[in-house]
Amino acid sequence: MPPETRPSGMVLSLMALAAVVCVVAFMTWGSRGNWSFVLPFRGTKLLALVLVAYAIAVSTVLFQTITNNRILTPAIMGFDWLYMLLQTLLVFGLGAATTSAIDPRWMFLIEVGTMTGFSLILYRFLFSGGVRDLHLLILIGVVFGTLFRSLSGFLQRLIDPNDFVVLQDRLFASFNTIDASLLLVSAVLVGLASLGALKIFHTLDVMALGRETAISLGVDHRRITMIVLILVTVLVSVSAALVGPVTFFGLLVANLAYILMPSAKHRYVLPAAVLLAIICLVGGQTVLERLFGFDTALSIIIEFAGGLFFILYLLKGASR
Amino acid sequence: MIEIRNITKSYDSTVVVDAVTLTLRRGGITSIIGPNGAGKSTLLSIIARLIPTDKGTVMVDGLDVARTAGEVLARRLSILRQDNHMTTRLTVRDLVAFGRYPYNKGRPTAQDQEHINKALAYLGLEDLGGRFLDELSGGQRQRAFVAMVLCQDTDYMLFDEPLNNLDIRHAVAMMKLLRDAARDFGKTVVVVLHDVNFASCYSDQIIVMRDGKLFLQGPPSEIIRPDTLQQTYGCPFEVHDLGGDRIAVYYA
Ligand SMILES: Nc1ncnc2c1ncn2[C@@H]1O[C@H](COP(=O)(O)OP(=O)(O)OP(=O)(O)O)[C@@H](O)[C@H]1O
Ligand SMILES: [Mg+2]
Image 1 (cartoon, helix red, strand yellow):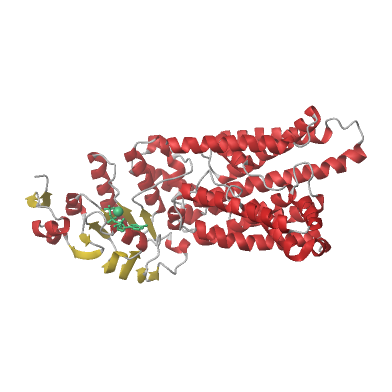
Image 2 (cartoon, protein in one colour):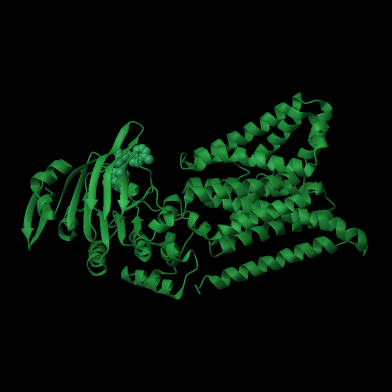
């Protein structure tokens, strides 16, 4: 066994322990013994938070692996906003009445499908080696993100006010008002994406070495990039549908995982990122809700910390 | 045997590799020399399927590199690139272990560990196995990447400027290592060199590239001559016979 194994395993166990503590605290703290109400209520919310944490952490790490950088994330590249734009387009095109008539779960699947198609075209062009300069990529990403956001904003102004209310209801989800109707289908999608990731798991460490090295070690770089982009898109759609766009959270947990894990191997980094995301979301929500009685602050705090991290990271990168 | 037929590559309208046709027989060391920008790295990358060619084919033991499954080729052909950069933080041992990936798909066996230890030992890296790549000197890092290629243990090995950053002792050791690989283990070694005297002393065959074209091909005795070198690099050369080797002098 390589010497790195033990410390990495230990760090991982500690993180798992902390995550379990957060989960238990979330479920039990201040429940006043009213279990029949508290368990399903908090359980649903917990499941959603865990799903979101998982989806964001895994999608960010995978995305950074295939793009070979640690600054860009699907969220910074505008994936979430692309999802929002699609939603807006649907309501705009079909009207809220039609959109609402469709079973939300089917609707969700259709959206995820369209989203996957769109982003594959867009991001394959960007990451198939055409654009090499990282700063240019960041710029393109930010421009795309803004474009998607402005387009949705523009369309929302044109929409019939009644439709807009329906749309707003969907778009402005947060960690507090999670769309529970989509939980089951989200869980299934996340499960399927994880199965897909498992199948190509052994190539991930090699993909992280960069395109050329991966190819010379026999990895079908194009194919794996495609597969990973599909998985990432599905995961991003799930988290965007459940809680809306979260720009910097993925960046934060992925980079914390790289820093805290002695080994860069995916079998350590991926679970670490997921556990850290759970600790942040579930732990943060518990503390804010129960201790301070705040309801909406979590996303602001997380985005603030993540944004700070992003700026520090950019500055550090620039000074090298 | 590597058969290179009519390989042509352009960027925008600049042709950087121009209709190169070339056969590299099994075994021995082939050096590629030529001025900066001659297209040596591009040709090597095309052979190793790292960049697609515009025209022409490369066959390795009868397998078209553009069509053959990557994992099949990875067990026959390996390459050290001119620039190696990693975003992930790896130890030397981790890096070298990736050389076994084509065989074990990320699950190292005891036999793989043996290969890794041998590759580390060949390049004098036993004591540095646990160091992170970003904690090494340029020459140490270069040796780690070469160790990874050795660990891949393929019949054909391409090295793009393996002597980069190496001191004289390690440069000589590296060339001896490549010669032993060719002689004792029957490997086919293709190596891009800038030091014409290393090419002269260690190659079975030298290929000269100029302006993207195959300029000359032959044994050192035919290539290492004042007139050919002068035509290649555009500066004056003297060539002396020293102990049976042809040594070029170009410092004056
Ligand atoms: N990605 C690229 N885009 C545009 N031009 C390129 C690209 N890669 C290489 N070139 C050009 O192709 C030519 C050949 O480059 P190549 O790297 O093959 O040269 P080389 O013989 O290896 O030189 P050196 O001895 O400096 O390593 C150069 O003129 C270079 O500028
Ligand atoms: Mg070169």
